[in-house]
Image (tube, helix red, strand yellow):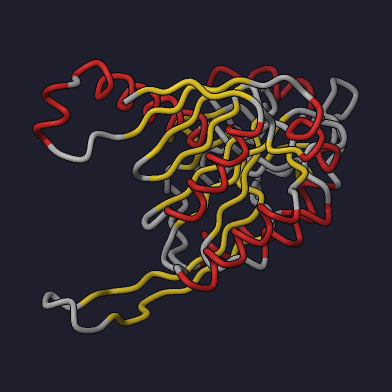
Length: 273
């Protein structure tokens, strides 16, 4: 089912989506300024359903990203149990979804937008059964295409903070066992990063996280990413970004070859190596 919403109904539906999430919750918004109500619901979700994977993506303000996500809200989000926070410079879309509902809207997750702007949204409710999906194929198609777009946004994002736990459930479902915990924080480097310009000749990019770091062919990782790489020490392990340009490399970079081949000549001239 696809439904149109406007005004306060949009904020109410976001709250409902947070409350009802059982598997994952994704919040995509260029600008984020959380209301007390949303903070309360997220806190409740984190405490009572710690297994729910929370994905927060923000954007814009490449020079000063904390204008898009304040330090106060960032520190709050870090208190949640199972969360990934990432950044997309070109982000303009606003999408809020769980495993059962996806909302495409003009509304930023920002208290000003929620209080003062004229906003609109379309909400897609996932068909609850195979029979319902067959009877409403257009809704199912819209749902799948929207999720593909959300996945694309997340895949192109730069990780800023990622914390979570991995549980293993017995085949009978009687108990769960904690098998892994992870906590990767690139925020200090990210929020203090300067704009990269042609004059910033001493800056490169971490080939795993994309954050700005000193350009160094022998050390193309941020401190956090290097610790992660060091666990296995595979210099040919395929990474995500070009150390020179910061663009997505689709696995064509590694510690052994941290710069995309197409950028090698330009990088060599610029950095004189």
